[in-house]
Image 1 (cartoon, rainbow, N blue to C red):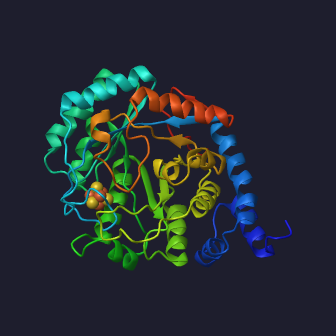
Image 2: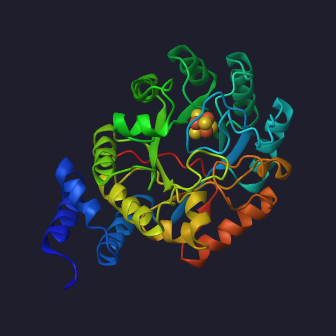
Length: 355
Ligand code: SF4
């Protein structure tokens, strides 16, 4: 590797062997992202993913059941203050029908995602979760509904939700303050992440790559947090601006940095479930395939009714908003088999390291 500096090679090799680095070393890796570094690390990350998960790609059926949100994250297209967002809520019956259809298409995990929408009470959510579990006992229910109280998290868990996605967004408190209004709290969010773990959920964290005002140190802090927390899932996609947000003029995150960080995270956590996100597919037509080649092993096709998909726009130009659910599944299956991987009918549980 003549174009790659010695130190980057050494750090990547150590990360592969030991799965941890110091904060400064992570920062060095982030600052030395290059085509050569990516070409050096990606095959290592893919080899580790293959050792744990083989050529299986897990699918999660994503149901975006409400685009109402009480919050105002500066980067998000469905933030409360966006008056141009056409709001919708799915009824319990429609959500259950999405799951029934999804089951027939071969999904064994349903991800219920929404803004922070107080319309859905804990009673309603628990009823929906239990009904999904009753109708499809061989399926997992994942929640992605934001910050709630400990008691609420506990109730959803007892109703049958076993996984929770709550991106930490950034492990740096100052950076968090630049992405969110003052009434949102970094400490509260991090506390929620810890409570989810304590209750027993499989926890998914993650961050946007290239978020406004993100520094190499911020990304290094994210990597250190991932190393210490050891999440079951880690969602990382490029930041993409949305026209109706305060960050409309900010540059998007890059494909290259996202792929590089996917590989780094695979080396940090060999067993983590790592999605090749829709945002990755939005910034490049083959982004999700490249994500898998960089070490990802999960894709999350949309199961929401086609008529509402255009309304759940967290960022500009989101892909797959016009397709039927069956088309999405077929498309991803074809994309994955095109690069030698297979989408499997499975709950896709995390494979925990042997102690
Ligand atoms: S990122 Fe989540 S919490 Fe923030 S405004 Fe968007 S939907 Fe609401």
